[in-house]
Image (cartoon, rainbow, N blue to C red; front, side, top):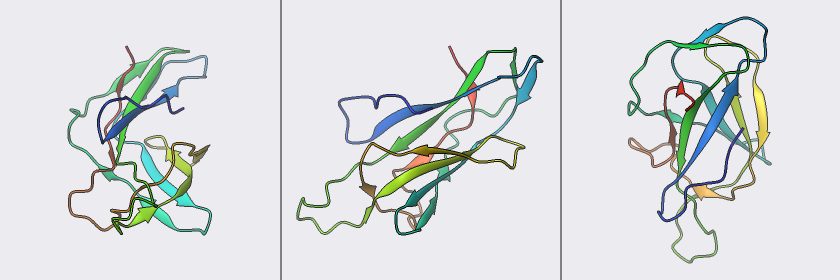
Length: 130
């Protein structure tokens, strides 16, 4: 689940946390699938950041891992004319899974960079939750 954004920068970061709800240990490896969806049906598959080293994460029952979602918020009325993407949902798919988790996006519009070579909105690989 998303947490409160990190204050103080133009880019914001939240941790997207995954918990092992089973009674057995599981292993996660890689990136979660991450996509913004808008009320009009537009979709934006988030880029993957190489900032976190890929490694297997063994999760005991109840243990957690997280990926960091970095995003660029924007104000559609700021007069810059910058492209805006207004997500209503964040869709996540844990690695090696096919079932998506849909979380309402309540953190406002983001700078529309869905076609950018180096977008300011992206997701990291999973890492252990400390």
